[in-house]
Length: 224
Length: 224
Image 1 (cartoon, rainbow over the protein chains, first blue to last red):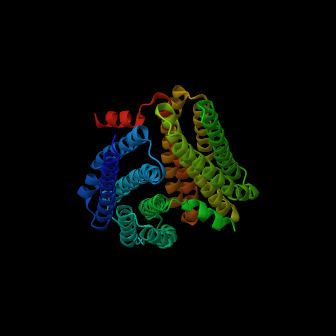
Image 2: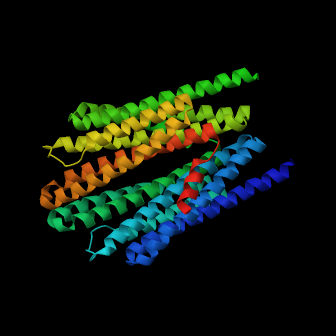
Image 3: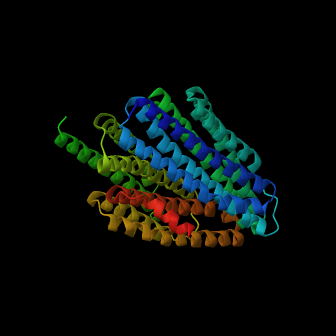
């Protein structure tokens, strides 16, 4: 098989992965919008959209496996395909978390919604930005942009910790809000997990572009 | 390079993965023991052990990448190596969850520990059994054993839901227990996540052994 055909297949694989990424990003943004605007229909939309994400994930996986099996790629192409497989798994998990947020938002909306002290809009905006930036890094094969995603992770961790503390206080003051506050705690945690997945994606982009295993360097730094 | 040498390398890769699996399993069991026996030292042990798990994960990953790059394996060998990469990632996340359980248990033990209505011992025993069974399926390349892991997942999901409901009620009755009850909710949820990872491992074993993408079949079944 001519080499040019192989590179076309790699480009197709990347396009599919970007389409999958767009689905995952939209799911998160819709889930956060649903929370912010108390929109039950949007919750339903996110849950129905999960099937499309799972389908897209399978297609990317199968394409990547086929390329590995038939083309036996080497060096940078091999790293790219392995990065695609990992990024694809993270995108699917981002989609799962979005569905979790939508389900919990539905539960919150089922009753009179209390005012809860969690800055979900800000966390949601930050998580969305991290995903968008990670996708941009993937699109351009740009390790520097990928590093900027990793730098954003601490902020969302802090916001999550603040929300949790405020929500526990809220429960202690008004115990009748416990079930609702717990839902908000779970939503906050889902956004924090989404940011972890965006960080994983950024790390995989760096692994692909630079050929270095960033986790390795990070762990060496931790061990010092 | 002679083929026999390649198969020796695959066997070595499997041994390393099994060693990594043993570390992850021990971490979960130690974390649950620490909770059950209020053992602060054991919490500390689990947290210190994380470095060893991360090291083992990197070694398995690098070995798998090397094999892919140098040997260009096909068919069942390729599927095996891809399954190893995925299983390795799930084991590392199991280790992460064990560290999370240990950290939250430390927080619970820092103060007078209240009696909390969550059956952590039973969930812990079940999660441990799922991991052990998934490892056995991997060791023997046995898809039937792997399927029995998947069948156990519903039970732990139910236990997690029951714990969460009981803990929310507990908070409503005695708001001063909110912080503690929340820690127990997070521990319960970590055990549920560990069981999800064990299920992923079982699915990857089936993918390796049968060459069928089980996720595909499951999703088709869902779509019906």
